[in-house]
Length: 604
Image 1: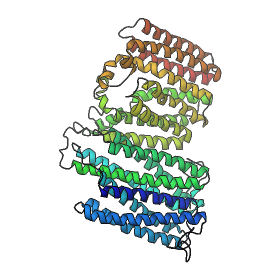
Image 2: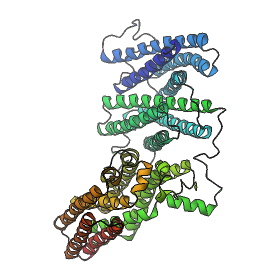
Image 3: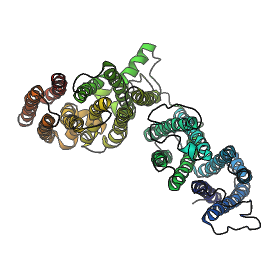
Image 4: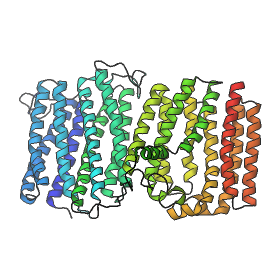
């Protein structure tokens, strides 16, 4: 049961967050001068005159008065009940002068008629106040945990502090922009580009807006990083997972609202939501950092694991480290993905695109695929250790630490997006980024360990390179691109299930519900045959839609018919090595089919 201090701390934090959400309503509705004097609403008149703006501004002041009372009570109760706990006592006492300072600054904002710098200072103190009361509430509710690895807890706590710091910086720049007025808020009339560019011409109001968007991207990556770490820690805690996940959800909503601010030309509802989500994100970031820090305190005195999951088995040489990072990207899989990219580019161009465009697209696509694979290895390091086929991968072999692998994956993803955006186009970059997100969050974190249909849905990530190639040439997507996507999508299940049949024992030991483990080999062979038929039909669709020539048609009929025949033989007359032979043929088949696409595009 919660104590009176805990109840008061939670109430104070909640009302304070509401206060600043109402502050967003004041700014979004243009009610900052709804009350012309302070502390009265109008000269000689304490309450508002009845206009909407004066009512909104007075409501803000009323919530501020309520927060003043709550913070005063919080300090008093902390002195009575928590005097022996300085980490709770002093922030509780500090919240009251912060509120008073906020009120004084509010008066200064009115007196200076919303001067941008005073508005920004006002918001700085607001962030400090929210951080203070949220910290007290979170710290008072945190329970002691045991058996926590101190090094892992400390590393995660540092990451949450970086995330909160980046988020706070983002909000400060956003506040300054909002205070400068519509001219700054609409410095760029498009989104996510800026005057049609990734890096616009800077100067005047465009500089802070560009900084705001760069900080938004950096903060979002950190919030994502925190969520992935929270959900994959050895000592997984709901107290960390829930706020980390909530932070990602709120940030995604905030990004959507930020776009709505541009497209709606700063409609009041969009501005209000933007401020409200900003306050909620900040409160969530502070609460998460507080809980993470308290886990470090809980771990004090605990023995650090000698065989820590984050510790390599031995000091590696520079060459070994480079090799480990290289293997994290799964280079053989990348080669297979790139085989589908270049033919898509050639078909889109109706011939050979520029060598520079091909190289830029391949480099960016390789970085994106390497990013997804590195993060996948981080997330799957526990099951990779249980499977014979994957035990020698860098993480199970302790050739590199998990934290470094995750950082490597995130850095590759950021570089791939920026590189593709600058060297190719934003659509290609966005598609590559979507493939990373789908592979990591939809396939690896959700589907892989929960359903036998994991590879059916997850195969969409591997089919995106065909879209990237098409978009790189045309800047758009068309029907032939989607058919190429569909070919790879339908090809993936029979290709992967043939591999899974050979290593079904590994998947069973790791608890991964691959189709051979869940339904057995007979049903898997039947599904492989059915998908081979669907694949054969899908490849033939490209012939009329993209006006393909006889080389493609002959290849699709010949290699596709062979695929169907091999799948039928595997189903009706299974042999020990039949599935492995089909797996190897499926790779040759895909290369031959897309090779035919390229040849037809060249001579067509």
